[in-house]
Image (cartoon, rainbow, N blue to C red; front, side, top):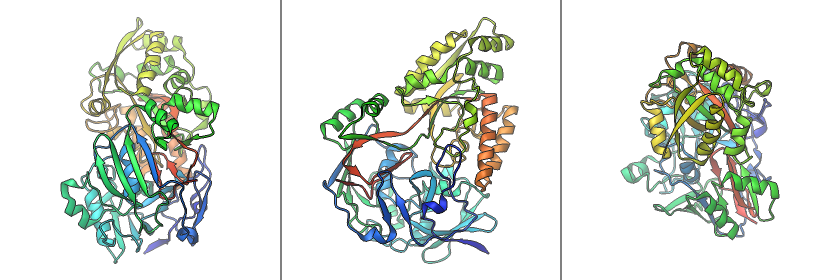
Length: 548
């Protein structure tokens, strides 16, 4: 038997209150029904299912957006980066979508779904009106192929709860997906799964990542490497043809240049503005430009490498001394030009599980150099010590590092910093890493158990090749955190999730394997005449966008 769950597109059905966020994912194990969807997007427009057929007119037929990074591939299974999401959200349909905020999840390419009684599987019912850009109608065979395509891919590796050997067609448009274990953040994870055409993907072969064929609101036209990616509106899109007929995503690596071009009117959206430009715009206001935020979902942290060559980070007192020596408010003010805030835990305010109480008497938001020196002396370093740190050549990191270096020096800690390009730094940190410290950040998409507590902050992932660069898998004290994370993975009750997430943050703040530094929002700047677009974390939903 299964518990039937029809399409939950009414945001009110999914939303509920929690500390620090506006709503949460619906419990996949509890079915509720909705026959009409009423949504209000980030620009304030409302739409109903009945109104989908009404034509929205746009004053301009082309939108130009600027991105500072060129994606390595346009295959959604290949990478989980902002650069690729900006494209694949247009070219592909995701099985589920975020609705307004990352805590509200609604079926999208999937019309409805049913959870097994024991939560060990989910049956997905595909919409019956989806047509791929090659003209093929989507059906259950394509959905089965989709999961097979993700098997063994970079994104597929993060979906380790899926039993890829137990994905079965149960009807013309229905597929049952077996799970390796009940997973409380299942729908969150399926947000990053796009629908693939078996025929088109197979036909394109190795060229698919450069010439993608999806079923989304925009069709791929061309990719001029180093310059732009051009898309055209899908006039037969099941959710209505996009009002804006053409989309150009230009590669403008210099963030300051993005703003110059935006002010000049040669682009419509600066996807990667400098934080200083955002701060200036928020302070002064503008008649022509506005800030569009994906939510306060970023946390920057200092990872203490338990397996560092020096062995120093195995001593909790050293990690705590660093935490006492820094002032996260000062770090955030410099790193984010006043648009960020000092972190007090590893979950920011815009995410499920944010713990307001951690702000009280936090050791992170005010330096205590004497306490830091006391801990260093207890650990056998009365005269101070030298630590090594690796960082990527990213503005936020380099600015934060300078402040951290100065703060630690006052407590007797000398910080030797080595800077690499972003790709090299990430590869080193996730590999056989030898330095004592590394600067990292994570954008939290939806349920924190998907990321970062199932990736960056899970002790079991603290091994060579894992994304947990604190490498604390062998720390006996990390066993308590792993136990909480293991329970989180199988927890469906939202209130219990919040309780466990707070417990996890408390353990992390006690042990300081990852020292929280900054909370920040994902911001972009756009022309005020652009309406109807929605940014949720790094997902850009443009199919209802238009120009006034």
